[in-house]
Length: 307
Ligand SMILES: Nc1ncnc2c1ncn2[C@@H]1O[C@H](COP(=O)(O)OP(=O)(O)OP(=O)(O)O)[C@@H](O)[C@H]1O
Ligand SMILES: [Mg+2]
Image (cartoon, rainbow, N blue to C red; front, top):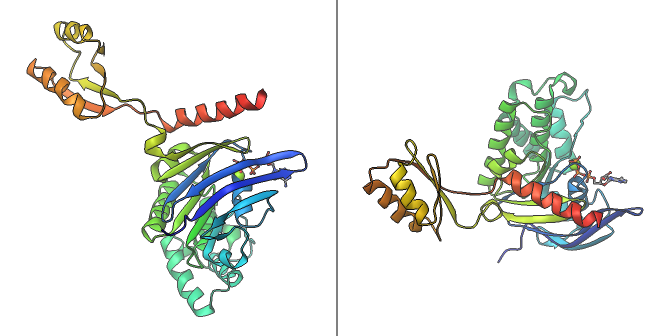
């Protein structure tokens, strides 16, 4: 089997006595969108910088694209949009993309063609020859995304890609991320915007105080023990309600909560309701929201901290 895109067995980073990263371990499957979530100061940027050798980890064991973390040549296959990326104001969007291409040693002809395509993808084609100094925040981020892709990377690290971008721009950035995945790239996104990550990530890790508090697929993290909810058209009639409650189900107005091993287990209840003339409006599996999972994870690390 091909190695994971990122496989961290053990990574720690101390700034003097301050532990910015503590025994971080995580695995990012190839071709997936991975969201690293965490409150301000959790260590997200430090982790990404450690993988990219911008920061020197105190202890580090793991691989990036199958090579030891820190292996220089592997970095040629990596794209990066730094947090608060600031490119020189006097360069045009096209020049910024060209500049990164030069750093990544992309052959000139290829770089030119690629820059053209990418500026189009991020919706900056018409602005490509204006100076960075005239761009809005959202436009700067788009150019940032384009430069992160110029070397046709296998993995792209995006540190807060939607920072300062308006809702419309965020949706577009999400589409660009989805497109990266379709192209087979691995995308590693740092964010504290849960809703945004929820919509695009296959897997997430939640970090707090330099530790990974939780990680897994969204499916597994938000799972709640076999709880289902049925909503009926109008309140459940009194006699049906009494009957259901007699069987230990919870009924409140137009909602019936039930425990079942899977969706099949709820069908009998649905049949029963329908046979009594009750109209079903909705049936869903109850899940925790990512926000609930996030807050719980962050709090649990916080408690350990204060011990
Ligand atoms: N060069 C440094 N020297 C000392 N401490 C640092 C240094 N860089 C980062 N830190 C500290 O390490 C911790 C983690 O910072 P980091 O920037 O990785 O957090 P983050 O999760 O990216 O936060 P944000 O969401 O605000 O971007 C913070 O407490 C920060 O103050
Ligand atoms: Mg950060």
